[in-house]
Image 1 (tube, protein in one colour):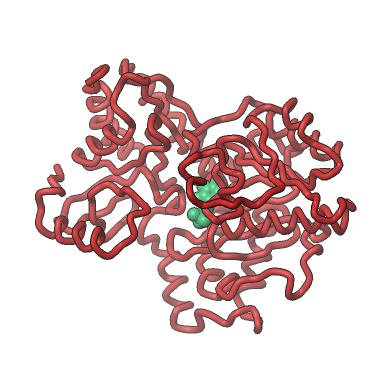
Image 2 (spheres, rainbow, N blue to C red):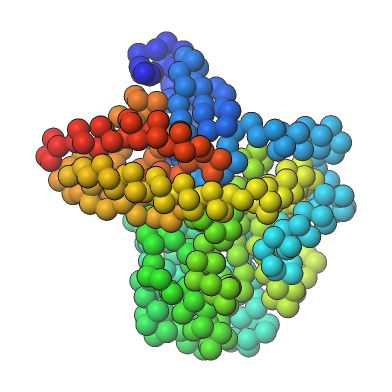
Length: 413
Ligand SMILES: *Cc1c(COP(=O)(O)O)cnc(C)c1O
């Protein structure tokens, strides 16, 4: 299908980006010009099925009519007030998000990393002011293999060597425990523990799904020890894994004390993130303690309200569960010897490639040539996370191409 690297418009764009942009990414050589539903068109006119969905920020696909209409309407009214004044979108957005999530209070930011930073500050302050931890001693326990963003504090608790290399000195106060291991968490908790911060499924680490019941046991342990349980649902939330939020897989009593949300919260149109929690916990923040110039801006809130409404009413959780199960079974049914494991939940699927086979990136480049865009998560996992509005027929179309590529990979080839 696409012969992107030989085409002149593509090459021209690749050259400009290479010359003038920082080289902090290694994108596939496709220059997207427009998108509609689950499909994008590049500058040569080639069409591709998007199976990454901007790391789950595009759960509603491209050019969603309702999102674009809300954005356009708000663009023509007011886009930014700063938090020095109120605006008529922020309050309703917070209300809608509370009703969706079952929490009492929202603190809006912009990027996912900012939501995580907010949660860390909230946990530390709660630790000192409410739990009574000695000044300067508060700890937030994190899981090995985590991905919570890219700020200097957040990479301080990353276990990925590349994410840290050259960026020290690091922020202290973040002990690490193995992901999925409740006993290790129990051992790590002490009188200075303010919170446990964890992703219900570790997506960037290669779609790692913890044992059933893990989140519920974390909840119990945190309650027992007066420790806040904070779930990073930035990628797994908003119907991606077949539930509205991934922690719900373990039942209603697994509810965290706070969630970080982002990505799809802005409908793939604007950046907006949030921490949601109880009024009691969020009350550690007083005016002037924390904030953001663009946080809670009326444009983002207007779009976010539509995103929240669609999560609530469009049955995307059920769709994600059903189509995810279907897609996963199709991937398993290929029976390619290159594949070590197909795993995931809902439409968050990882295909792990065996060690002596080509790297996941090799497969992603082949898929691109066949009109499918997806991305590796670490060296050995292909991540499939299409927009949740994908049709079964799109998955069938994709499988006609994915199957042969998986079969074509040979050991040590
Ligand atoms: C993407 C992501 C983040 C960071 O979000 P940004 O908007 O890129 O800052 C944090 N946590 C998880 C689980 C993510 O997937």
